[in-house]
Structures are given as C-alpha cells and as structure tokens.
Image 1 (cartoon, rainbow over the protein chains, first blue to last red):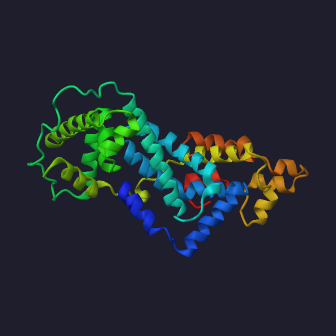
Image 2: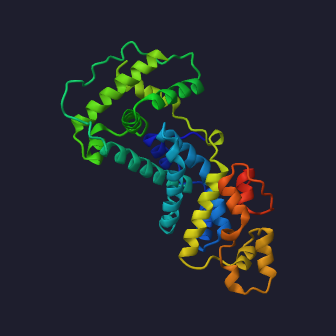
Image 3: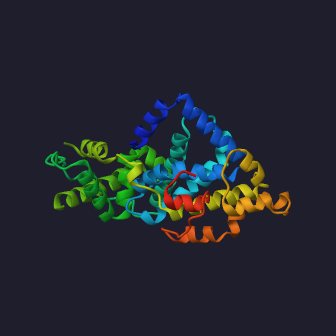
Length: 205
Length: 114
C-alpha cells in the first residue's frame, strides 16, 4: 500500500475514518490484548506495523539512516503509552503513522533550531530558475526515486531537512518558522539555497 | 516550471512507499519487542503465561515449560524473554540462528506472523 506525506496521510485518515468492521475489530482486539499485558499481542503489534513505520521514517530522514531505528522504536514506545487513548476512529496503522509524523517533525525541528546559519542577511532568495527543468518522463518511478534519494543524500543536512519538511511533509515556510523559532524569511532563504543546490546536483546527475 | 511545481511533481512521482520492499530489520523488530515488553512489565505483572495460552496464543517451549513446572504464578507473569539467549541473538544478529516454534524473536527473523 502506498502512502505519502502529510496530504497522503490525511487522505488515508479520511479514507479509514470508518474502517471496515473486520479491521476495526482486529485493531480493537489487538489493542485490548496489549492493554491486558499479553506479551504475544505486543509481538503481533511489532510484526504487523513495523515495516510500514520503518519505510515511512526511512524515507523522511534521508540521508540520516543511522537515526531511523531509534525513531521507529520511539514511535512504538509512544504508541504503547497512548494505546489506552486509541479510539479506533482511524486504523491502528494510520494512528501509528500520525505518531511517526510527529517524531519526524521533532527531528526536523531540532536540526533546524540547532543551525546558526539561518541568517536574515544576504539577497539570495530564489536566484535560480527551474524553468528549463523537467522531470524526465522516460525515467521510471524507481529510478526517479533513487536519483532523488541520492541527491538528498549529497546535500548538506540542513538543505535536505528543509526540503523534506517543506515538500514531502507539505509544511509551509510560515509553519516551519513557527516551529523552529526562526523567522519566515530565514526559512525562505534556506529553502532558496537548498533548491539551488538541489537543482545543480539534479542537472549534474 | 517553477521550483514549487517541480518539487510538488517530484514528490508525487517518488513518494510511494512500498512497505513490502522496505522491510524493517529483524534486529530492530526484536529490540522494539523487548522494549515494549520491558515497558509493560515495569508497569506491573504481565498477563500470566497460563492466561496467555487460554487466550489462544501459542507459547514457546520455555514458556510452555513454565506453565507446567511447579514454579508458582509469580514466575508465569515475569518476562521470561529477558533471560532467554534467543533475545540476545535476535537483537544483535540480522539472521539469528533461532528456530524455536512460537518464539517471537524467531518469527521476526523468519518474517512470519507471530
């Protein structure tokens, strides 16, 4: 099953707000068993949900694959802590992906807050044009994905973080500024530099 | 194409996560399971192995032995996995040589349902 960023997650939430009874019952049964402290239910919880959470977190932390395991584990621990509040309005999977999204944003926020280089100075807002840049329709999705991932990996970390947060998680510069305590202008400036560098690497690849 | 349109299209084209092709490492699943059961046990006794079996769950050979041994209920609500060699192997090796039927760690490493 495919899942995307914020919009896709929200679409999925909407789509599963009234989950089919069978899955809803299965989710409820599993949650109740874990709350009764059934260790085998905890194992099932991990087995059923770890692959999708791992795939999501891994895609959002590129290139920091070293942090993926810790964040996925944090998601499960936070999920366990909040299970008594799970009401079944969405599927358990969607509910866990929501927690994962918050954890990923915690990481983005921490990384950008730590940066001193988000200055107001300079005049480098969008100096590069994307007019001549097209997505090569002949590239299949897997190759496009690999190329994108490679470029994100090559970018300085603050550039990949700000692009992932803005475009893959669909957050506005204003929201990012609010969450990091930076000014919107500083975020826009960082985005402009990140896009420029991304474009250079895209054209060179 | 402006930059926002370029990135929006790029995300549309590439943001497809196939969970089947991005399987979580078995070591990670093992560590997460250990962490969850530790958290459950810290908050009070686990569901006893006897009750777990009655609920229709399968027990591993060591857990099954505990339900038959004259050890008292206290031993049956403890986290037996915390002292099991399978846990240590499963948390540190990606293809751990553990094959006990109904052992969660063995099943993470075989990718089967628990």
